[in-house]
Length: 431
Length: 94
Image 1: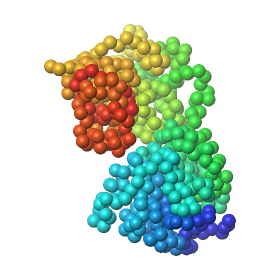
Image 2: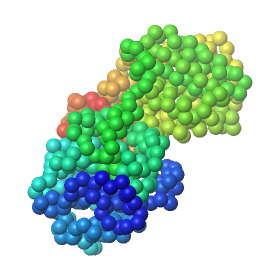
Image 3: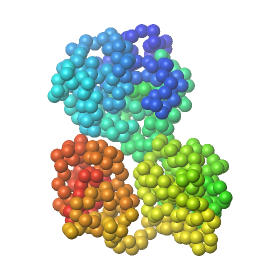
Image 4: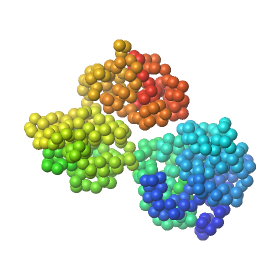
């Protein structure tokens, strides 16, 4: 193996397995990726070339403004007329920017994509529609499908939602290389290219997972079922170092990151309910305590109570990710819920909330809009709001505190799946 | 006025609705687990499985058929933002 790799000094393809080359580009000055991700030392756009006895496959391309570097590396090894296949594991523009130009230069190449990628492919090629034949040739592939390059076989793994609906992985059987797309990738730019040569990229790897893959943990688990049985000598992702030294540990690490840590603590099928609140005069806090009391009457529901005033967002996001139900309590100030509530509710994009139960409550002085606004936000986050929020004017009296306990009992009952006789309701009666 | 009964199996709730009501109009109000994206039949996020009463929904349009196909929807899946209730049916998130 080459221990003196420095891909910034040349524009050649870099061979890292027999007939398998890196033909990507480095982007060391990038500091923010996709608006939301910090990239403290830039990123790379990895593209790969596989040579077989009967042709060549290009796997993914690069961001458009790095096309020149990509084409130079490609041309250093093959002629465009040799390219038989273009495999697209993921159609985000940072991997398909050079695609239209590549299709012009290698018009004979057939495209291989996942079923979900069709509409995105067509959208990507819209600006180039004058030069690319309208009915260009693409084939959709699924797990179990493969294509041959004579002495080489590329097989496909259907791994959707990592992190787009279109994502897939491609496996080169003869060399045991997994071209994983964004899976096992990270924004870490290093001219030494390989995980055993580059600097310490552990933070970048985990940060990338936390922001890109974390909302799709269940899909990660599904993908791992396909990936783990493979013999893997190297993992070639679309960003960051090529993982050639002990690649298996990154697979194991993905499983660890995707496994619920709470499930190791919680016994049986207990459910978890978290109540977050803010309170200015102690009234919303009082409601929170009584709701907690009510919910705690159910043995199989674990209730946690948190005052947002005493916490930080990130650990709360971790808690929310694993909770089964969430209640938010906020007073109404100037017709709105208070800022810490919004801060937390606007920090949940990195986790999957679909199907969690939600609810809102709060004491108010005059108008009390906060509860409805929080509910709307929770619906926007794809949570279920099984019962209408609870509002109390100023100081809760004993009856109202009992209503709070009832509110807690109801959400706990929903969580435990104990059915009530709901009957048939009429559409006209719905608010 | 013609009516239909739509049952959301995930929350075990049945609602009487006027014929022609879109599934989305009901499911959002009662908090069923169907999720929505564009709400205009384009993104495929709200794919819903019809477990009973397939014929008691309006026929899918050509565009809806296309989106269902692109999203590899299974047989008897519909877009909740497009399908209108005509009679009794049961649905659950796909």
